[in-house]
Length: 106
Image (cartoon, rainbow, N blue to C red; front, side):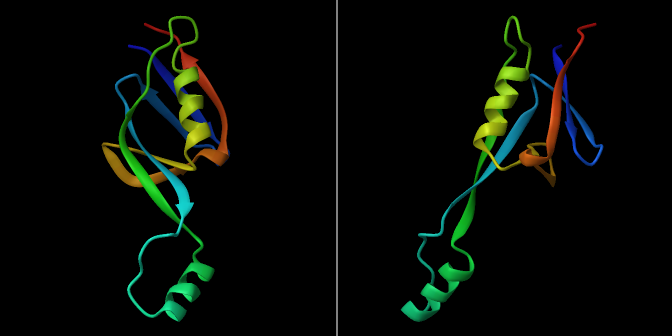
C-alpha cells in the first residue's frame, strides 16, 4: 500500500496511506445569523470576522508516477488545518508542513 510521510516544523512526522481520510478545516466569512441585536452582531463580526467550516471524509489518491504527493499538496493548498477522520483530537496546521515524502512500497 502506498504511504507518505508529512513532516511538520515541530518535528512531528505523520504517516498516511491512500486509505487515510481527512477532515479539512478552512476559514470562511462570518456571514452567519447570530442571535441578538444588530449592535451585538456587529461587535461579534468585528471580533470574529471569519469562522471555520469543515469537510469530512476527504480521500487522497495514489498517482501512478508521483504517489500521494499530488493529492496531499492539493489538500494542503485548500485547507488551513487537517484532522484525520479516525483521530479528531488533533488539528494539524498546513502552514507548518515542511515536507512530504513518498515512502517506498514494500
